[in-house]
Amino acid sequence: MVQLIKSIKAHSDKAWSVSAHKTLPLLATASTDKTSKIYKLSALQNFPQVSELEDTHKRSIRSVAFKPPLPGAESNFLDLPALAAGSFDSTISVWGIDEPETEIDDEEVLANATEILSSPNNEWNLMAIIEGHENEIKAVDWNHTGSLLASCSRDKTVWIWETDPETLEEFECISVLNDHQHDIKHVTWHPHQNLLASSSYDDTIRLYKQDIDDDDWSCVGVLNGHEGTVWCSQFEDNKSVHAASSNKIRLVSASDDLTVRIWSSVSDEVERDSNAEYIPSSIKHTSEMVWEQESVLPAAHKYPVYSVSWSSKTGKIASVGSDGKIVIYKEIKGDNDERKWVIDSQKESAHGVHEINSVIWASLDDDSEVLITAGDDGHVNIWKE
Image 1 (spheres, rainbow, N blue to C red):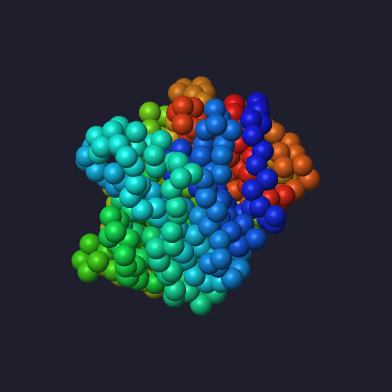
Image 2 (cartoon, one colour):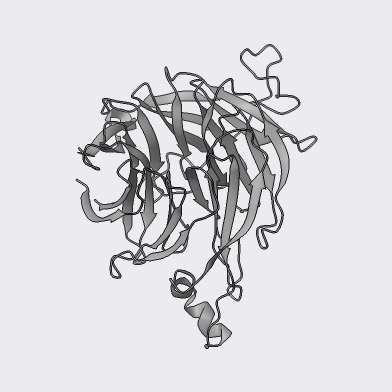
C-alpha cells in the first residue's frame, strides 16, 4: 500500500503534469495558473522549492519535461539541467541554469555536482520560446539523447524539433506528422531509441520512426483497440532487469474506456505488406512494426484513466485518473511460466475528491523510489510503497 510522505500545495489551480530529472533530484510541475515550479526531491530537506518559472505563458502550462543527461557525459563536464514546458498558448518554453558560480575549484564542483545543480541558489532562465503549433499544446517530451523534442497539439499534429543538446540555442522543426484525425493528447519517446508514440482523441496510438532512406519521419504502426480517447502511454525500459525481454518493445496506455492496456512488438521489423490496411499515407519507404495487444490489465478504475507510468526499478505500472484513485500493478509468473498482471495495491481518494492528472515514478536524493501525482486540487503528492 502506498503511503503519503509529502503533499505540496504547488499551485493555485489545477496541476496538470510532473516530470523528474533522470539523474538529479529535481521535480518540475505544470499548472493552469500559468506557472511551472521546480522542487528538490529530498525528504531530508522536506522537498524545498528550487524555482518558480512564471511570466512567460499567457495560458495554462499543460506539460513539462526535463531534458535527459547528455549520453556518455565525461566526468569532467558539468551537465546543466534544462526543462521544456508546453502551453495552451501554443508555444513551448525552454528553461535552464547558468554555470553555477562557486568559490570551490572545478574538481570539487564535479564531486558535488548533484547538490550544486539542484540548489535553490541557481537561477532558472528562459532560454528559448518555440512557436509553430496552431493550437493548444498538450504534451512535450525529449528523446533519450536530448537532441530531439516532440510536441503534440489540439491542431492534430506532432512536431519534432532538433537542437544541439549541449547549447539548446536553436530548435529547428524537422518533421510535422499529421496522421491523427483528432486532438493529440500525449507524446512519449522510447528510453533507448528514436521511437515515438502519440496518443489521441481518435482512440488510437501511433508509432513513428525516421525513414532509413531519406531521414523523413513516418508512421510505422497504429494501435487500435481502445474504445475511447487515449490519454497517455509510456514505453517499458527494456534494459531494466524486470523487463520481459530486452529485444521486445512494450508500451502501456491509458484511456477514457477505463482500461490500461499493454502492447508489444519484437524489435526486428518486417517489411510492410503493400496491401496492408489502416496504414497512414505518411508511410512511404519505411518498414512497419508489427504490434499486438498483449494484455488488458485487471479492471480497477471507475472513470477515465488519464496517466500511466512504468517503473524501470521495479517493473511495476501505476495508473491514475478521474476517479482519484492510484492503482499499482505488478507482473507475476503464473502457471507454465506464463506472465500475467495483477493489482498490487490501490489508494482511493489520493487527492481527496479531486481528479488526478499525472503520475510518475521518480528517485529521491537517497536513490529510493517514490510515486508522484498531480491533481485538480493544485497539489503534488509524493508517495512511498
